[in-house]
Image (cartoon, rainbow, N blue to C red; front, side, top):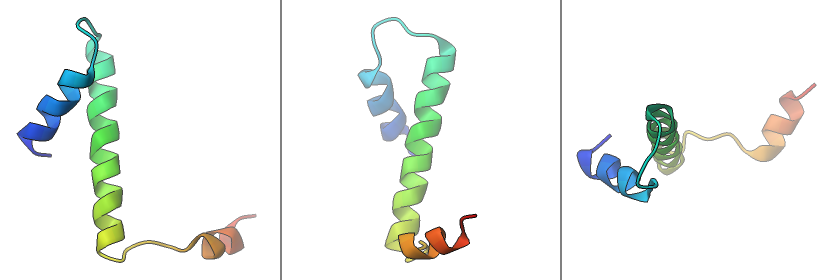
Length: 55
């Protein structure tokens, strides 16, 4: 994760926040970035295929 992403995420938090809230926010941003990168690289699974795998 780039420093700019962390700074942007911190700026979106309220003036006072718990460390746990910061950690949750950074984890969320990281997961979204990872998902977007996977999508760009074609490393995704179509919804219909996932439905086939469901029980």
